[in-house]
Image 1: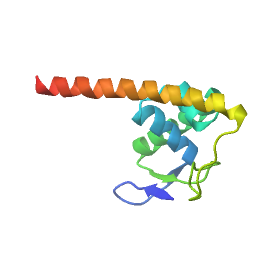
Image 2 (image 1 turned 90 degrees about the vertical axis):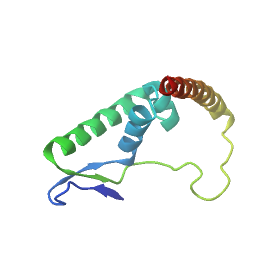
Image 3 (image 1 turned 30 degrees about the horizontal axis):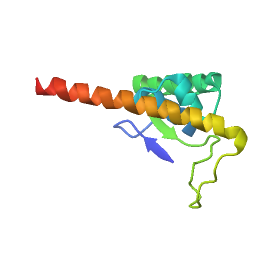
Length: 124
């Protein structure tokens, strides 16, 4: 569990689930499109959207009202977290994995281009 508290260290805290945190991370930090992020998380776009809206509302409330933010709970499976070799996807999942890989490749190309552009801007 992680917890972020206002400077006073007192008062109530909002609870953000790990799914909600991941939704914010993927869209607001990594700049993924919602469809890409939903695919990455293995959930529907609607479920992803619901997680993202709830998370943003909770973070906004914490910032505006000086509340803490506690990250805990949720329903999730960590990829490769067991220490064992990750199993290959089943035949039915292969198309989904290939689609995710293609989206990630395109995203990497776009981000690489943005980094190169920013470096050029800094030089001038």
